Length: 228
Image (cartoon, rainbow, N blue to C red; front, side):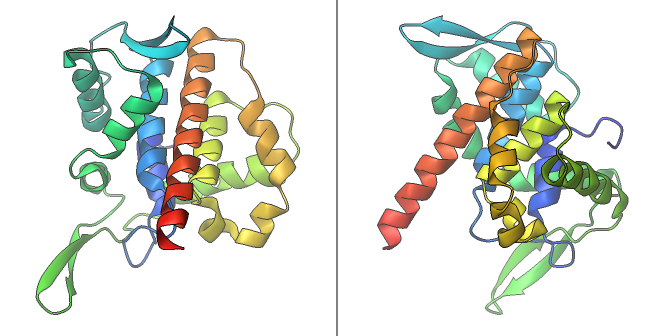
């Protein structure tokens, strides 16, 4: 893993087409990025989950930033919120943050991983795109994810499990590795999502991942119903 590369950055690298610099269609990458940001804050013990009236409420445990502009922005939003809210609510809010993709992509551009470019759409409008400049970070991520999905290794680190689960349920793994290959590994992917680590922060992060997965599936159902 590239030094200091955070889960939202890893998700976005997987979701971006290398040459086009645009995100794959038919994916729910904003929810995957949102789940990754919340999981990151839980792993870093900046957030914790409290049980209140049968709901898992996100509570700020430590307001000190972790050094990632987007993730720290999420922490600040939660810390400054007038009312506490559950995981699903915050997932929707983070997924809907303005310029979420552009903020993360530009962080990666500053590291020399992506380049910032523009593409004309219908001659009049321009679209910001982020073609890959240095393939090494994504290749490392893909190798790690591929090993996790297509091997039967019993032990898997928490960050990789979160990355795989979010990338799978958001549909990102399908264009990256092939829909048929991913469908054949359903049992393995279910097992990765269900494993419970022993550390409290890791368990909370996994819960955030599961909530993100549920929110993504609900969003996908709503889109399917609206377009059918």
